[in-house]
Length: 525
Picture 1 (cartoon, rainbow, N blue to C red):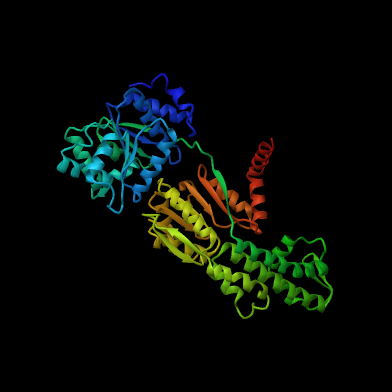
Picture 2: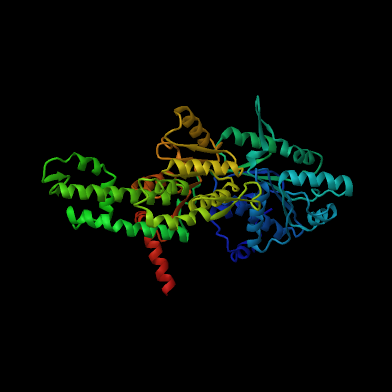
């Protein structure tokens, strides 16, 4: 079978981005089918689902009654199939897409299901639901729903494997499907994977059959690191951050007046974190040197100590607000020694306690768990992780704060997210080594880490990197970005807070500020 002459014309109208290597892959697939099965081994993010749907379209153009199955055994196979279905709808030219999966078991009747299988060009269904339907419909209605299938696509084909003492064997999820093929329904299989493990790839080939063609392009990295600045708006956070900014004005003015009127607010805040209070306490004779600045007398020293102490507490509270948990922030500002400084912030901070969010369960995101005191970046990160995990991605989440990392890890585990690990400076060396090795080998889905916890981490093993905070040293973020080549990078930013200034610097360094300017010019035109 060859690509039809009108195929290029047909796909010109598709809104989905198509790349040359994807179209080449479709041509190769069409040449091989239906005589042989294929294992398409392309890295994550290279559009294997797009290649699959384009192949469906090319076959359908030459065989009007062609029928296809898209199945998966992922832990969230139902949602993975639904994602492929939604992408298929964008094509427009592939009619009668059917989605057959109901986790509650209270969906269509058996007769209705058989009619959907008969009427659908493509059926998207998890392997367990597909095989249950096959046996039940064949037994009770004497109808073979797999009889006229042209291709069966197995999403993430590594799931056909199960380990045993001698290596790999066929997974129980696929045993029934392969037995059906052996009994005469010998439709070809298009397996999709992105494994770099040669043993796994060869084991899949062996199970698919000796005539199976391996189409492998592990050299592909079609997507350079894509940075997405994810803005989050929360009115209570904006209100508290602005109040802290207002409170910062007085100590900043005092420090500028005594040390140097040209000192910027940022330089003063950096000073407050550089041990300036300890150095001030040690000053005994005046005038005295404080770095390159001069402290004239004991009164100036006393005023500076009060100003820097207040400045440090306000700056630290802001970091806790924006980069740690609401609980840590509230605990800090309600300490007896801090209540006087934060008296104007206590009232608006009560809004943090009353705010509730609905978080999705991993297996069934429509079932929500309501939680209070969840940092906005946490529930945003959970949504992002949820979306990418269904595509088989491996996700790294970076945070500077132990409390935030701990809280996110606990939440993800409570919501049923699989293989979530957390590494911090408190992790033992043995734990760290094992977790990093497992992440590198693809056995950890989500790894949350702090700067110390992530030492030696192979960022190239990640498909998605999420920054829960913007580090003071922007170079650290640049280095992580360069080491995680070809991934999708999310930087989470709370709108109308002090974080917006930091993100401008980052966007400038990665060249995204120019893209923003070009976008604005286009909009003006």
